[in-house]
Image (cartoon, rainbow, N blue to C red; front, top):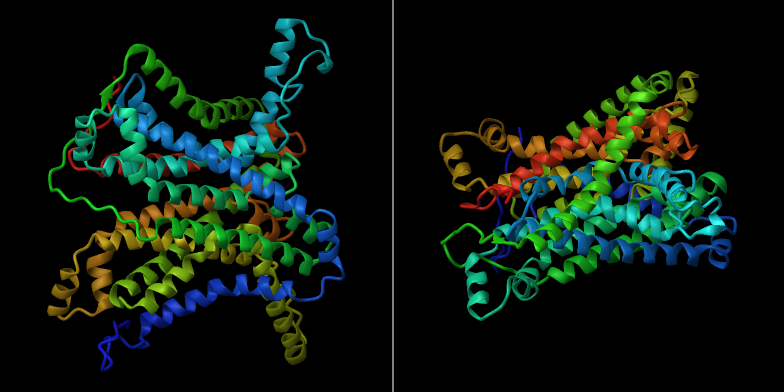
Length: 565
């Protein structure tokens, strides 16, 4: 039975590090996460048969340059779209505001590679947009007009900005809703307009939340493979796949992965440094509804167009196109083993969600019972997997699993004369391991947030009644934080359904998920035949997105539900 260890003090009053069951569990989980990252670094130090020097002299700086430009473009795009739309739906009244307040999160349910396939299908030379332009103006060849090239760095930046801005919108809107109305009263008293108040009061106060949202968007950008591969943009992630699969060099892929890890660590460090020593607290108990300034007809129409455009491009367009294709070509999709892909995806997502939720409970409750720096540090380290791109984790997982399987096979042959083959690395278990490492942060942080809302006196009351920490967790805490656990499981389930780079590398032979099925067909210009699969992935993410929007809206006491006028 798990017991919370006491915290003995030294003569100077400082806590000693004491081992207990919760510390052991957190250490085991932290080591479990550390193995893939450490494996990448160790493999990168091995011989690469000249691959690294070849990459340095040829394409490495192209990879690095494109990755930096992509991050810069996505960072600017997500800040502009996410922050501006969050401010508009929070502080102003205009037509359609009530629907847009939650609809602006819907693009988060669309995998970026799905949006890339749909937009390319509509904007390329044979697509509906250029076809309509040629019909209207009588053009007969591409030499007679100019149209931007969608399969480019700019196109990839646009697509990723459209599906990733909800990270910034989500956190920025929550920050705006929680801000004190007294600050705006003071700003207006000093003669500032609502727009001026945004730049001088609201935006600076929301800066930590915006920084976290941008950091999450950029981490997803580093993890992206489907869009940049479809658009033929050579980035570090694309380079890892090329060196691993085409050059057959594990060490070379690990060396590129190490560069990508360095990018990620720099990003995390900058994000945390930007928020260091910046804390904003409410100093009044007066909570009022936000002012919700009415807009004139012209400005209201402009706000409606500005907020509706990312929803239309990031969700409505792909959902509409995919629905049309799915209805027309559903028979072809069913013949392509669609139901098998659904079953594989659901099985993997369910396992990942269950394991991550359980590990998140262990980590979060352990931190609550053992409030030592070491325990908190172990939990934070165990959550680092979300900051590591899926392609990097895949490389780091394949290497140790390969060694383990080979050693187990050799031992079985020597002792029993029975070959075992690739027992783990050649099965779906490797995928589940990869998903757990990557998405553990979602489980830990969500459950930790739920536990933080339970007063510490609950533990005292339970202990007074003779309940152990484990019994208190089962009988008291779990029923209270059930919504947080369900939220964590839903988020992991949806992200697992969408995950592509990690799945492409770790999946067994002849084993496809909806993500790999859609990517392979759409890459071969067969979007119509995989539309039902893509639509299934999108549908799986809609409900959690709407639930998150409702949670934000209700997070401020006295806050009215957004009105439509």
